[in-house]
Amino acid sequence: MNRHRRAVSLDKAKDVKGTLKNLIKYISKYKISLIIVFVFAIGSTIFSIIGPKILGNATTEIYNGLINKISGLGGINFDKIASILIFLLGLYIVSAIFSYIQGFIMSGVTQKVTYNLRKELSHKISKMPISYFESKNHGETLSIITNDIDTLSQSLNQGASQLITSIVTLIGIFIMMLSIDFVMTLIALIILPLSGFLVMMIVKRSQKYFKRQQEYLGHVNGEVEEMYSSHTVVKVFNAEERVLQKFEQDNDQLYETGWKSQFLSGMMMPIMNFIGNLGYVVVAIVGGYFAIIGRITVGNIQSFIQYMRNFTQPIGQLAQVSNVIQAMLAAFERVYNFLNEEEEDFVLDSKHVKVKGNVCFDHVKFGYDPNRLVIKDFSVDIKPGQKIAIVGPTGAGKTTIVKLLMKFYKVNDGKIMIDGVDINKFSRSELRSIFGMVLQDTWLFNGTIMDNIKYGNLKASDDEVINASKMAHIHHFIQTLPNGYNMQLNEETNNISQGQKQLLTIARAILADPKILILDEATSSVDTRTEILIQQAMDELMKGRTSFIIAHRLSTIRNADLILVMNEGDVIETGTHEELLLKNGFYANMYNSQFESVG
Picture 1 (cartoon, rainbow, N blue to C red):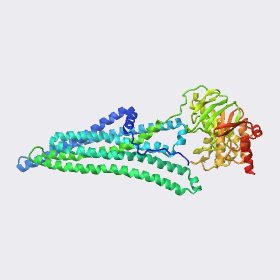
Picture 2: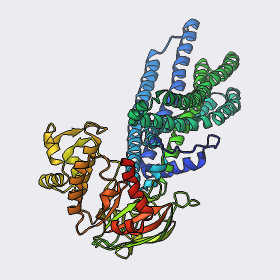
Picture 3: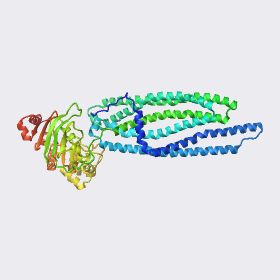
Picture 4: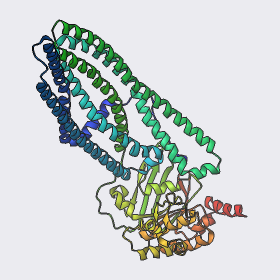
């Protein structure tokens, strides 16, 4: 539960231009599909815009027919009206078809974009150093992969189409209004500067809240994930109230930013409708006067008023879509930043695969914070096949040595070599394939016991899995379980004990048959009798292999070929168990204190 939370600068403005540029660059690979979407969106909108003008012609025809009928000069020409309406119906059908095609293609593009982003995120995770995940909140990382991708998918599909449609509609309506009357169009345009000013003010104020909303959503998801995975610890220490207070604090911040962003975005439509209605009243009065003096027809008044009513709609849609685009850019910014996190810089190709097991630390210096070294000056030359024990008090740097050996972190100075080759010259997969690890913190996944053990060697046969289980002294226990090796471990793998989990991970390491073994408190969760059996199996497994054993119980490493005693990042003593006891130094004090505490 002691995880580092990502620092969030709430006052820092989002890089809208940079993020938009990156998004356009990313989706440019689908430019042909987007061009088709653009063309069909324009076509659909144009056919829809022409409709009111044609409908106005039908109104004019009816009006003229009524006047003629009153004057005794004829009647209404229903055939002409019918032909106008049929033509209008055809336009609307074509517009609907174009709109359907546009939506179909855009949905496909959106799904391809999000599919590729999810795939890239998945690949990215496997390339990122362990240091990233040890310094970031797991829930926030999950939020990027789930919530931000979903937000991007929905916003891209909705926002892009609506943006194109609104712009084309606005331009088209303006042209149609000009074709009816220039003066009335100028009156209608008076609302644009005011509308644009209000939209820009609202967007400017709401932008920061949309960014904060996405950030706090990641915090809340992180809290939920962390508390759910650690609920047993929370209950043991009666920390429910503290957990709820912390969650409520983050949830309140999410609520605060959420309602502000939604309130500001919700203000746009009422404001736009109010301004539109003012313009509508003025146009209705002026249009009525122009009809009286014979400047325009009655049908043109109807068409213009309809255009006027529709004129504010795309402006409102643009204001509304700006919120969607803001959410989309906020989501893409987080995804893009994640995809551009620093990766492990292992070489892509290497021929140094067949290793003997010689490991050399040459004046290695390292600190998680470069200004505070954990490993100050570590040097040791380990021969192939040696069993090396690393002991020392908590915080001495024992596990850090292993992390450096696996290149989970880069050394600040010095170098680490395997068979005389710098580990930086190995590819990631080759370097990791050399090692087999059994850690104090076990890791198993939701699946069968057979699948979990086979994770060490996916090509292994069932018989090889059973043999590895026998060496780890877990075979008999597995046989007593329902379905044996086919028993399903649940999502939290808490339907077996911690000690049994550790035995399974040991069996997995045995199955992997690595060149170098790393055992970090591998028997810490098993009873003394089982520990002795595992030690015997491990002694057999470690024959001919270089082995690193990190242990706090010093009685378990008596037969090590070399014991490295660490304290405050330095190797202060080296030798065998007997040699170190004869020195009567730091190791001897540690060893004797364990038995004194027992007594």
